[in-house]
Image (cartoon, rainbow, N blue to C red; front, top):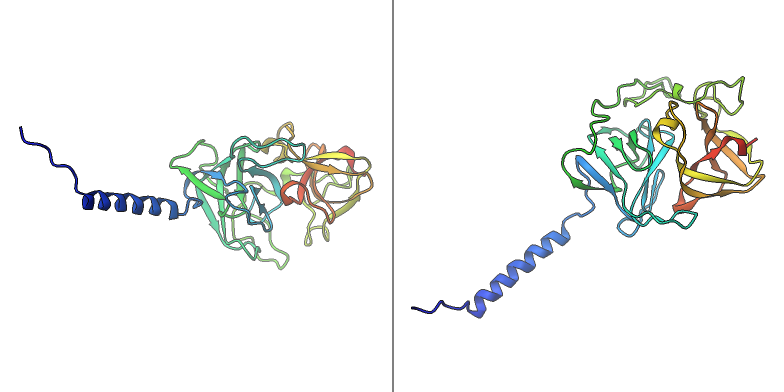
Length: 272
């Protein structure tokens, strides 16, 4: 029976080179590239870039492009202010993007769809750069219809060019009952003249998420993700108050929380 010929060194070398080339291609491919389908949030080790609405291991969610915070998605290993560490990444169904700056100088593509984690609802995210495609298809049938609410006008009277998930009526507007509730739903430069300034009356823990149902005004809050503590007497700049008047979405003036995050949910009873 004839012997089977053994590969010559030159053939082995060619095979090794081909394997090396394949590995190089795989490594050099943009591992952090987003795509339509289920995307995970990249960790701080993968992407440490920070700007408005995003930072190492996190991305802000809103009901509209370039809008106020309604929650966050976090990457694996994000360290919260209470010492807990995110065991795995949050995910988002990116079904499509709203294309346009919406007034943001750095982002012109706003992904939208079902945002999981401790938010668990429909949202826009602040840009695509913090996401990496995990698989095609979607993890939820929610949000497939897309945002369909016509936004309000800008300060110059021109309409918002991108659709919203909700109008600002999902937030508290009962200003006569609670002075931290904006009659417009949110406090902004062209709605009430700017953020509503108040101060904390006690030291309080603040959170990154209370859940989509609570942020959008229809359910009970489930506070998650400790971002830090505001001391008594700190200046608090309020963007909006939730419909049930149990939480304000605000920032501690001039300060940052875990991961460089500015905006957080603060218990209403902690502010004047």
